[in-house]
Length: 396
Image 1: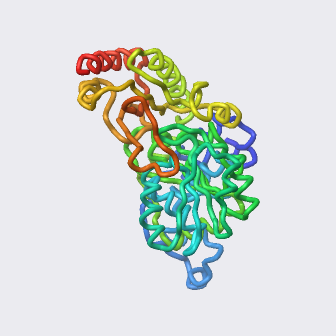
Image 2 (image 1 turned 180 degrees about the vertical axis):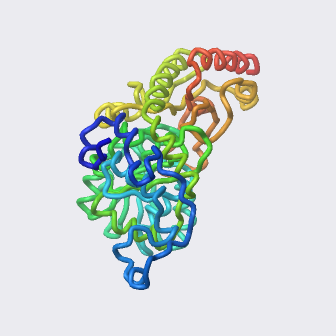
Image 3 (image 1 turned 135 degrees about the vertical axis):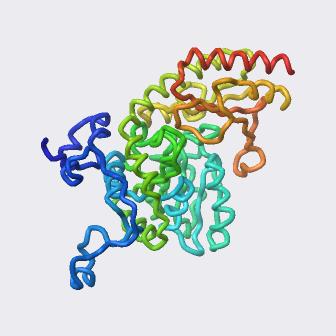
Protein backbone atom coordinates (compact mmCIF):
# COMPACT_ATOMS: atom_id res chain seq x y z
CA UNK A 1 0.00 0.00 0.00
CA UNK A 2 1.32 3.43 -0.97
CA UNK A 3 2.38 5.61 1.98
CA UNK A 4 -0.21 8.30 2.67
CA UNK A 5 1.70 11.58 2.69
CA UNK A 6 0.00 14.86 3.74
CA UNK A 7 0.20 16.03 0.12
CA UNK A 8 -1.49 12.87 -1.18
CA UNK A 9 -4.15 13.00 1.54
CA UNK A 10 -4.98 16.61 0.66
CA UNK A 11 -5.92 15.55 -2.86
CA UNK A 12 -8.88 13.47 -1.66
CA UNK A 13 -12.40 14.38 -0.55
CA UNK A 14 -13.29 14.85 3.13
CA UNK A 15 -14.96 11.46 3.26
CA UNK A 16 -11.79 9.72 2.06
CA UNK A 17 -9.55 11.83 4.26
CA UNK A 18 -11.38 10.61 7.34
CA UNK A 19 -10.52 7.00 6.53
CA UNK A 20 -6.77 7.61 6.25
CA UNK A 21 -5.96 10.76 8.25
CA UNK A 22 -3.60 10.42 11.19
CA UNK A 23 -2.63 6.78 10.78
CA UNK A 24 0.34 4.95 9.33
CA UNK A 25 0.10 1.14 9.56
CA UNK A 26 3.77 0.82 8.58
CA UNK A 27 4.69 2.33 11.97
CA UNK A 28 2.31 0.03 13.87
CA UNK A 29 3.56 -3.34 12.58
CA UNK A 30 0.88 -3.32 9.89
CA UNK A 31 -2.11 -2.92 12.21
CA UNK A 32 -4.77 -0.64 10.77
CA UNK A 33 -5.34 1.64 13.77
CA UNK A 34 -2.83 3.47 15.93
CA UNK A 35 -3.16 1.73 19.31
CA UNK A 36 -3.55 3.24 22.74
CA UNK A 37 -0.18 4.33 24.08
CA UNK A 38 -0.34 4.72 27.85
CA UNK A 39 2.74 6.08 29.51
CA UNK A 40 4.61 8.89 31.18
CA UNK A 41 8.31 8.04 30.95
CA UNK A 42 10.20 7.83 27.68
CA UNK A 43 13.57 6.02 27.72
CA UNK A 44 16.55 7.24 25.72
CA UNK A 45 19.21 5.04 24.17
CA UNK A 46 22.06 7.22 25.42
CA UNK A 47 22.97 10.09 27.74
CA UNK A 48 23.78 12.29 24.76
CA UNK A 49 20.31 11.85 23.28
CA UNK A 50 18.70 12.52 26.65
CA UNK A 51 20.65 15.76 27.09
CA UNK A 52 19.86 16.93 23.56
CA UNK A 53 16.14 16.33 23.25
CA UNK A 54 15.26 19.02 20.70
CA UNK A 55 14.98 16.60 17.81
CA UNK A 56 13.46 13.72 19.77
CA UNK A 57 9.97 12.79 18.59
CA UNK A 58 8.54 11.88 22.00
CA UNK A 59 10.05 13.14 25.26
CA UNK A 60 7.44 12.66 27.98
CA UNK A 61 3.83 11.49 28.13
CA UNK A 62 2.37 14.97 28.68
CA UNK A 63 4.09 16.26 25.54
CA UNK A 64 2.63 13.63 23.27
CA UNK A 65 2.43 9.96 22.31
CA UNK A 66 1.81 8.17 19.01
CA UNK A 67 -1.90 8.14 19.92
CA UNK A 68 -2.12 11.89 20.48
CA UNK A 69 0.07 12.58 17.45
CA UNK A 70 -2.30 10.56 15.25
CA UNK A 71 -5.35 12.56 16.38
CA UNK A 72 -3.56 15.92 16.24
CA UNK A 73 -2.22 15.25 12.74
CA UNK A 74 -5.60 14.09 11.48
CA UNK A 75 -7.54 17.01 12.94
CA UNK A 76 -5.02 19.58 11.71
CA UNK A 77 -5.36 18.23 8.19
CA UNK A 78 -9.15 18.23 8.35
CA UNK A 79 -9.23 21.77 9.78
CA UNK A 80 -6.58 23.29 7.52
CA UNK A 81 -4.58 24.23 10.61
CA UNK A 82 -0.92 24.63 11.44
CA UNK A 83 -1.38 22.45 14.51
CA UNK A 84 -3.77 20.96 17.06
CA UNK A 85 -3.68 20.29 20.79
CA UNK A 86 -5.96 17.78 22.55
CA UNK A 87 -7.22 18.40 26.09
CA UNK A 88 -9.63 16.64 28.49
CA UNK A 89 -12.84 18.57 27.65
CA UNK A 90 -14.39 21.26 25.51
CA UNK A 91 -14.13 23.77 28.34
CA UNK A 92 -10.46 22.88 28.82
CA UNK A 93 -9.97 23.65 25.13
CA UNK A 94 -11.62 27.04 25.62
CA UNK A 95 -9.37 27.75 28.61
CA UNK A 96 -6.12 26.76 26.87
CA UNK A 97 -7.04 28.79 23.80
CA UNK A 98 -7.85 31.91 25.83
CA UNK A 99 -4.76 31.59 28.03
CA UNK A 100 -2.61 31.37 24.91
CA UNK A 101 -3.59 34.87 23.76
CA UNK A 102 -4.50 36.82 26.93
CA UNK A 103 -2.61 38.41 29.80
CA UNK A 104 -3.46 40.56 32.81
CA UNK A 105 -4.80 43.95 31.77
CA UNK A 106 -6.24 42.73 28.46
CA UNK A 107 -9.78 43.30 27.23
CA UNK A 108 -11.76 40.38 25.80
CA UNK A 109 -14.92 40.52 23.66
CA UNK A 110 -17.31 37.53 23.83
CA UNK A 111 -20.55 36.93 21.97
CA UNK A 112 -23.63 37.11 24.19
CA UNK A 113 -24.84 33.79 22.75
CA UNK A 114 -21.76 31.90 23.93
CA UNK A 115 -21.76 28.44 25.55
CA UNK A 116 -22.57 29.23 29.15
CA UNK A 117 -19.47 27.61 30.75
CA UNK A 118 -17.33 29.95 28.59
CA UNK A 119 -19.13 32.90 30.18
CA UNK A 120 -18.61 31.42 33.65
CA UNK A 121 -14.89 30.96 32.95
CA UNK A 122 -14.51 34.55 31.74
CA UNK A 123 -16.49 36.02 34.63
CA UNK A 124 -14.61 33.91 37.17
CA UNK A 125 -11.09 32.76 36.34
CA UNK A 126 -10.22 35.41 33.76
CA UNK A 127 -11.57 38.21 35.90
CA UNK A 128 -9.44 37.04 38.84
CA UNK A 129 -6.42 37.10 36.55
CA UNK A 130 -7.06 40.70 35.51
CA UNK A 131 -8.82 40.24 32.14
CA UNK A 132 -11.90 42.40 31.53
CA UNK A 133 -14.70 40.92 29.42
CA UNK A 134 -17.37 42.71 27.41
CA UNK A 135 -20.25 40.77 25.82
CA UNK A 136 -21.55 41.77 22.40
CA UNK A 137 -24.67 41.27 20.31
CA UNK A 138 -24.02 38.14 18.21
CA UNK A 139 -25.49 39.89 15.15
CA UNK A 140 -23.13 42.88 15.41
CA UNK A 141 -20.90 41.89 12.46
CA UNK A 142 -18.47 44.61 11.45
CA UNK A 143 -20.09 46.93 13.98
CA UNK A 144 -17.90 45.28 16.58
CA UNK A 145 -15.30 47.91 15.74
CA UNK A 146 -17.16 50.31 18.06
CA UNK A 147 -16.34 48.00 20.99
CA UNK A 148 -12.63 47.71 20.28
CA UNK A 149 -10.23 49.29 22.77
CA UNK A 150 -6.46 49.76 22.65
CA UNK A 151 -6.13 46.73 24.97
CA UNK A 152 -8.68 44.49 23.18
CA UNK A 153 -6.56 41.42 22.58
CA UNK A 154 -9.10 38.77 21.58
CA UNK A 155 -12.63 38.25 20.29
CA UNK A 156 -14.42 35.01 21.16
CA UNK A 157 -17.14 33.93 18.74
CA UNK A 158 -19.51 30.99 18.48
CA UNK A 159 -21.48 30.44 15.30
CA UNK A 160 -24.21 29.59 15.73
CA UNK A 161 -24.85 30.07 19.43
CA UNK A 162 -25.50 26.62 20.84
CA UNK A 163 -28.84 27.55 22.42
CA UNK A 164 -30.31 30.47 20.50
CA UNK A 165 -28.61 29.84 17.13
CA UNK A 166 -27.74 33.34 15.96
CA UNK A 167 -25.14 33.02 13.19
CA UNK A 168 -22.35 35.55 13.47
CA UNK A 169 -20.57 37.16 10.54
CA UNK A 170 -17.18 35.62 11.26
CA UNK A 171 -15.34 37.10 8.22
CA UNK A 172 -16.51 40.63 9.13
CA UNK A 173 -15.56 40.22 12.80
CA UNK A 174 -12.20 38.72 11.83
CA UNK A 175 -11.42 41.63 9.51
CA UNK A 176 -11.99 44.13 12.33
CA UNK A 177 -10.04 42.06 14.83
CA UNK A 178 -7.00 41.66 12.60
CA UNK A 179 -7.04 45.34 11.71
CA UNK A 180 -6.54 46.01 15.43
CA UNK A 181 -4.07 43.18 16.00
CA UNK A 182 -6.53 41.04 17.98
CA UNK A 183 -6.89 37.25 17.92
CA UNK A 184 -10.14 35.65 16.78
CA UNK A 185 -11.33 32.53 18.61
CA UNK A 186 -14.33 30.48 17.57
CA UNK A 187 -16.23 27.64 19.15
CA UNK A 188 -16.92 25.61 16.00
CA UNK A 189 -18.40 22.52 17.64
CA UNK A 190 -21.85 22.83 16.01
CA UNK A 191 -20.64 22.96 12.39
CA UNK A 192 -17.29 21.15 12.68
CA UNK A 193 -14.62 21.91 10.06
CA UNK A 194 -16.68 19.99 7.49
CA UNK A 195 -19.49 22.53 7.47
CA UNK A 196 -17.45 25.61 8.42
CA UNK A 197 -13.70 25.75 7.68
CA UNK A 198 -12.69 28.19 10.43
CA UNK A 199 -9.20 29.13 9.37
CA UNK A 200 -10.31 29.89 5.82
CA UNK A 201 -12.79 32.34 7.34
CA UNK A 202 -10.24 34.29 9.36
CA UNK A 203 -10.36 32.41 12.68
CA UNK A 204 -6.99 32.15 14.45
CA UNK A 205 -7.93 29.62 17.14
CA UNK A 206 -10.80 27.17 16.56
CA UNK A 207 -12.25 25.15 19.44
CA UNK A 208 -14.04 21.83 19.03
CA UNK A 209 -15.61 19.68 21.72
CA UNK A 210 -14.63 16.22 20.56
CA UNK A 211 -17.12 15.01 23.14
CA UNK A 212 -19.81 15.78 20.56
CA UNK A 213 -19.71 14.78 16.86
CA UNK A 214 -16.13 13.50 16.78
CA UNK A 215 -16.96 10.91 19.41
CA UNK A 216 -20.51 10.31 18.23
CA UNK A 217 -21.22 7.87 21.06
CA UNK A 218 -21.57 10.03 24.20
CA UNK A 219 -18.82 8.13 25.98
CA UNK A 220 -15.75 10.38 26.00
CA UNK A 221 -14.68 13.84 27.16
CA UNK A 222 -12.32 15.61 24.79
CA UNK A 223 -11.49 19.07 23.50
CA UNK A 224 -9.32 20.19 20.59
CA UNK A 225 -7.90 23.57 19.63
CA UNK A 226 -6.53 24.19 16.15
CA UNK A 227 -4.41 27.21 15.28
CA UNK A 228 -3.24 29.00 12.17
CA UNK A 229 0.45 29.77 11.66
CA UNK A 230 0.19 33.08 13.55
CA UNK A 231 -1.22 31.55 16.73
CA UNK A 232 0.24 28.04 16.69
CA UNK A 233 3.45 28.58 18.66
CA UNK A 234 1.72 30.46 21.48
CA UNK A 235 -0.97 27.75 21.68
CA UNK A 236 1.53 24.89 21.76
CA UNK A 237 3.70 26.63 24.35
CA UNK A 238 0.69 27.26 26.59
CA UNK A 239 -0.43 23.65 26.23
CA UNK A 240 3.03 22.32 27.11
CA UNK A 241 3.35 24.63 30.12
CA UNK A 242 -0.09 23.65 31.47
CA UNK A 243 0.18 19.93 30.64
CA UNK A 244 -3.58 19.35 30.60
CA UNK A 245 -3.40 16.57 28.05
CA UNK A 246 -6.29 14.32 27.06
CA UNK A 247 -6.37 10.70 28.19
CA UNK A 248 -5.14 8.02 25.75
CA UNK A 249 -8.38 6.03 25.76
CA UNK A 250 -10.42 9.12 24.89
CA UNK A 251 -8.07 10.02 22.05
CA UNK A 252 -8.22 6.48 20.69
CA UNK A 253 -12.02 6.50 20.78
CA UNK A 254 -12.02 9.91 19.08
CA UNK A 255 -9.85 8.51 16.28
CA UNK A 256 -12.26 5.62 15.89
CA UNK A 257 -15.29 7.88 15.91
CA UNK A 258 -13.65 10.19 13.39
CA UNK A 259 -13.73 7.55 10.65
CA UNK A 260 -17.55 7.63 10.50
CA UNK A 261 -18.02 11.23 11.60
CA UNK A 262 -18.96 12.76 8.26
CA UNK A 263 -21.46 10.02 7.44
CA UNK A 264 -23.14 10.47 10.81
CA UNK A 265 -23.07 14.25 10.53
CA UNK A 266 -24.76 14.24 7.13
CA UNK A 267 -27.39 11.78 8.27
CA UNK A 268 -28.14 13.83 11.38
CA UNK A 269 -28.23 17.02 9.30
CA UNK A 270 -30.86 15.52 7.00
CA UNK A 271 -32.97 14.19 9.85
CA UNK A 272 -32.74 17.44 11.83
CA UNK A 273 -33.93 19.51 8.87
CA UNK A 274 -36.84 17.14 8.39
CA UNK A 275 -37.70 17.36 12.08
CA UNK A 276 -37.27 21.16 12.19
CA UNK A 277 -39.77 21.63 9.37
CA UNK A 278 -42.18 19.17 11.02
CA UNK A 279 -41.93 20.99 14.37
CA UNK A 280 -42.39 24.36 12.64
CA UNK A 281 -45.84 23.24 11.45
CA UNK A 282 -47.01 22.20 14.92
CA UNK A 283 -49.71 24.45 16.42
CA UNK A 284 -47.99 24.39 19.84
CA UNK A 285 -44.81 25.96 18.43
CA UNK A 286 -44.14 29.67 18.03
CA UNK A 287 -40.88 29.44 16.05
CA UNK A 288 -37.96 27.15 15.23
CA UNK A 289 -34.36 28.31 15.59
CA UNK A 290 -32.39 26.44 12.95
CA UNK A 291 -29.83 28.33 10.82
CA UNK A 292 -30.88 26.53 7.64
CA UNK A 293 -34.43 27.91 7.95
CA UNK A 294 -34.98 31.32 6.32
CA UNK A 295 -36.62 32.81 9.43
CA UNK A 296 -33.68 31.99 11.71
CA UNK A 297 -31.42 34.91 12.78
CA UNK A 298 -28.35 34.92 10.58
CA UNK A 299 -29.74 32.57 7.92
CA UNK A 300 -28.27 34.70 5.11
CA UNK A 301 -24.83 34.50 6.73
CA UNK A 302 -25.20 30.74 7.23
CA UNK A 303 -26.14 30.31 3.57
CA UNK A 304 -23.12 32.34 2.47
CA UNK A 305 -20.45 30.87 4.77
CA UNK A 306 -21.54 27.37 5.83
CA UNK A 307 -21.54 24.13 3.87
CA UNK A 308 -24.20 22.43 5.96
CA UNK A 309 -25.90 22.19 9.34
CA UNK A 310 -25.75 19.69 12.15
CA UNK A 311 -28.33 17.83 14.22
CA UNK A 312 -28.79 20.47 16.93
CA UNK A 313 -31.42 23.23 16.95
CA UNK A 314 -34.00 24.86 19.22
CA UNK A 315 -37.65 25.79 19.13
CA UNK A 316 -39.86 28.13 21.13
CA UNK A 317 -43.26 27.03 22.32
CA UNK A 318 -46.30 29.21 22.61
CA UNK A 319 -47.02 30.22 26.23
CA UNK A 320 -47.25 27.06 28.35
CA UNK A 321 -46.62 26.45 32.04
CA UNK A 322 -43.61 24.65 33.42
CA UNK A 323 -45.95 21.87 34.54
CA UNK A 324 -47.15 21.40 30.96
CA UNK A 325 -43.60 21.33 29.59
CA UNK A 326 -42.59 18.75 32.18
CA UNK A 327 -45.58 16.62 31.21
CA UNK A 328 -44.45 16.83 27.60
CA UNK A 329 -40.84 15.87 28.24
CA UNK A 330 -40.89 13.41 31.12
CA UNK A 331 -42.65 10.58 29.28
CA UNK A 332 -40.79 10.80 25.98
CA UNK A 333 -39.55 7.35 24.96
CA UNK A 334 -36.79 8.26 22.50
CA UNK A 335 -35.58 11.68 23.64
CA UNK A 336 -33.33 11.71 26.67
CA UNK A 337 -33.18 14.81 28.86
CA UNK A 338 -29.48 15.60 28.73
CA UNK A 339 -27.23 18.60 28.19
CA UNK A 340 -24.81 17.27 25.60
CA UNK A 341 -25.28 16.53 21.89
CA UNK A 342 -23.60 14.98 18.87
CA UNK A 343 -24.16 11.37 19.91
CA UNK A 344 -26.26 8.68 18.27
CA UNK A 345 -29.20 9.20 20.65
CA UNK A 346 -31.71 12.06 20.51
CA UNK A 347 -31.89 14.56 23.37
CA UNK A 348 -34.12 17.43 24.45
CA UNK A 349 -33.63 20.07 27.17
CA UNK A 350 -35.45 23.22 28.28
CA UNK A 351 -33.43 26.43 28.57
CA UNK A 352 -33.94 30.08 29.51
CA UNK A 353 -31.04 32.48 28.86
CA UNK A 354 -32.68 35.53 30.45
CA UNK A 355 -30.69 35.22 33.68
CA UNK A 356 -27.27 35.31 32.06
CA UNK A 357 -27.41 37.23 28.78
CA UNK A 358 -26.19 40.79 29.31
CA UNK A 359 -25.68 42.47 25.92
CA UNK A 360 -29.01 41.44 24.41
CA UNK A 361 -32.47 40.78 25.78
CA UNK A 362 -33.98 37.34 25.25
CA UNK A 363 -37.60 37.74 24.23
CA UNK A 364 -39.58 34.57 23.63
CA UNK A 365 -43.30 33.90 23.44
CA UNK A 366 -43.01 30.84 25.64
CA UNK A 367 -40.61 28.16 26.93
CA UNK A 368 -37.59 27.26 24.80
CA UNK A 369 -36.40 23.72 24.09
CA UNK A 370 -33.15 22.57 22.53
CA UNK A 371 -33.25 19.34 20.56
CA UNK A 372 -30.51 17.04 19.33
CA UNK A 373 -31.43 14.59 16.59
CA UNK A 374 -29.61 11.29 16.78
CA UNK A 375 -29.57 8.30 14.45
CA UNK A 376 -33.03 6.91 15.18
CA UNK A 377 -35.64 6.68 12.43
CA UNK A 378 -37.01 10.20 12.08
CA UNK A 379 -40.61 8.96 11.79
CA UNK A 380 -40.27 7.23 15.16
CA UNK A 381 -38.95 10.50 16.61
CA UNK A 382 -41.91 12.40 15.21
CA UNK A 383 -44.40 9.97 16.75
CA UNK A 384 -42.66 10.23 20.11
CA UNK A 385 -42.64 14.02 20.03
CA UNK A 386 -46.24 14.17 18.76
CA UNK A 387 -47.32 12.24 21.86
CA UNK A 388 -45.36 14.74 23.91
CA UNK A 389 -47.18 17.65 22.28
CA UNK A 390 -50.47 15.93 23.12
CA UNK A 391 -49.44 15.78 26.79
CA UNK A 392 -48.35 19.44 26.65
CA UNK A 393 -51.82 20.55 25.52
CA UNK A 394 -53.58 18.26 27.96
CA UNK A 395 -51.63 19.67 30.91
CA UNK A 396 -52.08 23.32 29.90
